[in-house]
Length: 507
Image 1 (cartoon, rainbow, N blue to C red):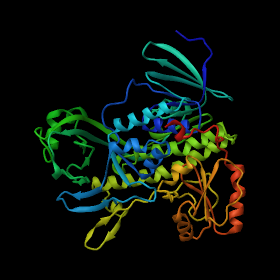
Image 2 (cartoon, rainbow, N blue to C red; image 1 turned 90 degrees about the horizontal axis):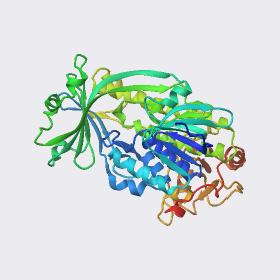
Image 3 (cartoon, helix red, strand yellow; image 1 turned 90 degrees about the vertical axis):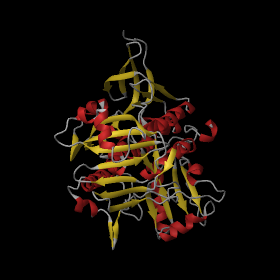
Image 4 (cartoon, rainbow, N blue to C red; image 1 turned 135 degrees about the horizontal axis):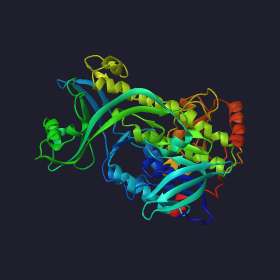
């Protein structure tokens, strides 16, 4: 039965409440946008999926005020080692246990249901953000003024609709929103079946270790991952002549795990065959419809960057949506979302594919070339985060497109907590330019001594940092600083302070 009452109106409707959708909803809540999240399932999926996120993601969680709630659910990762069939180390990808310039550790392990519970619970802080579960979106009709979103309430069969300024598809690999956008997928060539086994240890097995281990055995490549608590994961290649259903049967699973554990050591939580893909959507936006997360890109898991890429999507997109919807920016600003994010995610996927070549020993030389050779020692891998693609950055200036560091303020707090999800001008204390736009915060050496040191190290006098913490532009002298300040007002359109929600006000 169709509800004929006038449809509710929202600034943004998000389809899908996984980690990416929930993070995006929290960011939009922070920006003061009326947001509705529609999710087909009734509750958080109870089994593990993603198991790793990085310092940049934790910085996004800090931005929405949830990092402290997430910390009890994570452990630090010492990194990943690639071993040949004889157990000799081929590639050493250890992670430092000290804080990075982001203000957080480089690598965290987590249990996805725990993370989702925190992110979804955080939505209750925003009075203008709603979550509706068991709602299956089936039609999206956009016009000049917005999008008609039609969905079925699966709990009672009722058909409903709402109006939205924009719809964001965070609805996974089989995205409905992507179909309405009409986007094809660019295939980067990696498609392999792997058996994913999640086990709960019954007793301590310290010998399994805390490092992730990539067993580069040509007979059957495999991955071991230490999870939180007693959780352990194995990902094991399915051979071409094997049946996916047969491989996932308990007897076969235990046979494959026998080199590590027995039924006396652990119980199986989940064993399923997945095909790891490497694809990127060709079109991330069509008018008022956009994609984020797995709906826009899928990667092999060897870098642990699948969910991380989606969190970066959310951080890049949310402030731009707020600028268009509440700040009066041109809708063309949203075109910089794909142009910036697509090259970034492609570079990560291509590196994951190269590392997959090491694990499968099919392209081992190309994979090892991604690291740094050392005499009488395994190749050392250090992954540098890619730069933003072309978009809302000011020319070919020093540090443009890089992530800005997070500083420790003189009162001991983190600088992001002071500035919020806003544009920030980093500058020496001697010259405070007159900036009338309320959406730009200023941090100087008076706030944190390291700011001046960082500016001088890079030969600049100022840096303009976007809400997603990427550097939009820098200045090497006074004249360039004047141009940087002049460029701020016509391009930066964020909601006013009154429109934005303060974390202090809601906590």
